[in-house]
Length: 421
Image (cartoon, rainbow, N blue to C red; front, top):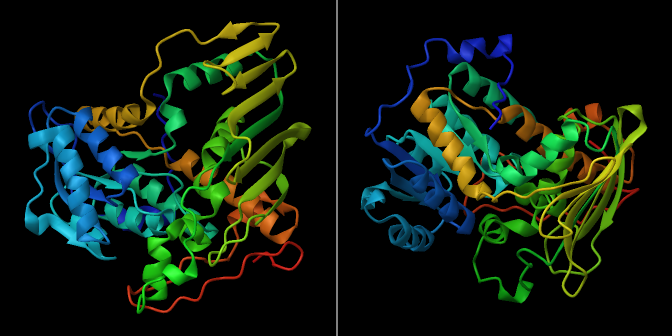
């Protein structure tokens, strides 16, 4: 795995002055204590992979919004990892502040797998407390959150902490080998990239009639988090960001010049404010283009594919069992595929053992911002430049959230009416 170190910034210096010493490589046999924040399916999977990544990794603390979710996750992990699950009853936490309790519970590594609206705050606290981190994608839902995560990733680099992102394709050996072929000139210079992410709905919004009496706005929205932009980022940012990440990778994580986009809500839903389809046209330097389209609708054609067009050939990923290149150079991946989800954690724990940190901060923020930029263009109906998107002042995530608090749902954005902020 290529290591990307994040650059230093002078204004972060004061934040790390006098920082406590951290792990500088661990001898074999010494336990690496792991904490899990977010005990849903992805968080439980990440914890299982973390425990498998190192012979002496052990799970010691967990947090979620419900004890039932914590217990269900723990039961699954005990089946998968047995005695490596060492979570005592007083290390199982519930509530919006549970992340702090896990991070403060004597862990060495924290796995952040809550909905992404919480990611910037959780990541910042983890790094401030000198913890190594695995954080799921995307890393924020608004531009202020992206800027915060970028600063935090720089702080992690200064503290020699490892920070691994859940952009799993970057850890896929067969996709990495495909992109190595492209970077070595197998299709010539990239002219255009077309990516599709056509699926069914991830977590459909339940009818308003099913909302329990007395439940607060905050609790209702968190329990149905995928349907609210402030906490999920919308379908382009939360799901299709994987396709956007591959686009960013192909263009060497160089930001685009601008983009235009369309999108909307084709199938009505009660409550929620997200779109069910997007189509984004990114303009890169040299008049190169990237197109990303996603849709989440029942009963439609599904596809998750990449078509990369160059001056000497075309690379296709996802339309067939293996990636292939046709043109001046013909190539097909012929090796054994790895488990990219496991590979993320293998890389993280190996880095901790070696005392040689890896930091995905720069490109994980670029990919998140790239998807968010497309969302901004679709919501407003305007052409959005990279600088506009990165410096947007629109803050979606509320400050000082309270579990029993009021939080009116935002209206579904209307292109030409919704303003860029």
